[in-house]
Amino acid sequence: MAEKLSALMVRTSKRPGKYPDGGNLYLQVAESTRVSGETAITKSWLFRYSRFGKDTWLGLGPYPDVSLKEARELALEERRKKRAGIDPLSDKRARLGVARAEHDNMMTFADCAIAYVDAHEPAWSNPKHVEQWRNTLKNIAGPVFGHMPVSEIETPHVLRCLEPIWTTKTETASRVRGRIESVLDWATVRKLRQGDNPARWKGHLNQLLPKPSMVAKIVHHAALPYDDIAAFMPEVRKHPGNSARALEFAILTAGRTSEILFAEWQEIDSESNIWIIPAEKMKAKREHRVPLSQEALDVLALVKDQKQRYIFPGPKNGSYMSNNSMLALLKRMKRTDITVHGFRSTFRDWAAETTHHPSDVAEMALAHTLRDKTEAAYRRGDLFEKRKLLMNDWGSYCIPPSQANVISLPKRKEQGE
Image (cartoon, rainbow, N blue to C red; front, side, top):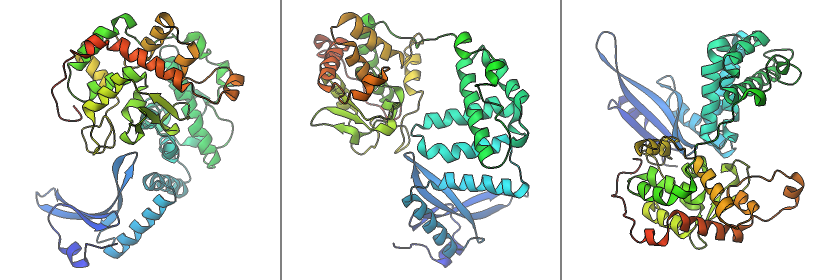
């Protein structure tokens, strides 16, 4: 490994920027303004690595407190962690959390929530899932008992958090309850609290709160009637940018939003016209093969760029598209009456009401798991050939051949529109 920095260069560098030393180690030089108005130069060490497809900068300490030699040793240690499958940032956060607990023999619920999510984040493939955990624990549980020592949280505190939203936002409240229970279980195992978990449901909160299914209003994702899909697709095609192409691809493949956002070019088998989604990206944690219709392949041809990792990249190089990109497109189209996820219902209704394709083929196309556990245990195939016929019919229904010949292509726009 070629080292690019010297002790003299580190000591004398004054121009702001990040200077590579090799092995993912960088010296960061920055300017800061003091209260007196004077400009000061600060220097620190950073370790750069890829985390969930994004560049992540891990602080290794300030210079001169940490010398060049020490920084290289710290960077070497982080590289070893990566090879061992340990995420450096999550490991640092966990160590800081434990250190705080050992220092004052107590952690707040907010501390524990951060440590819990950091510990489990590497196993959660969907960044949206991680964000939801952090936000709900911070915004719903945080104001009530986030500041409290985790050892002091009791049933009244949990109820004070859940009761205001239990009948109005039942699904969210139920998920928050489960997340609070997980954090408190983590704290118990860490010896930070004792006794029963005040957020447990069975034999405890189920005696104090109504069953979620009894109070929750079932709200289905707003879906476009399948009769309108052929007229809707040309309207989408009029819009430039990745969000419009992603929405087209989502409709034509009946995919979930997360599957579309994180789709990578390496998952496309161009010879067999198959999109192979890895198990870790699927809700059921099982590899899913999607037969691509000609209409779906045409969408890929519009965005094909082998230099990008993601098929529908975000504005920053190497990033994926925002979770709200397709929803924002629908708003620009003044179609707030429908949702992206609702197109899966459009597809399912079309298959059931206008075709002779078997129900289990349509369910398999949606990557739904079989409710019958016995049947699921014996089924080994994925009905691929039957699904290929189904998806070809769906593509032709969404974009009839006569329409495909005259549909206008959108003007090109910068990626990540």
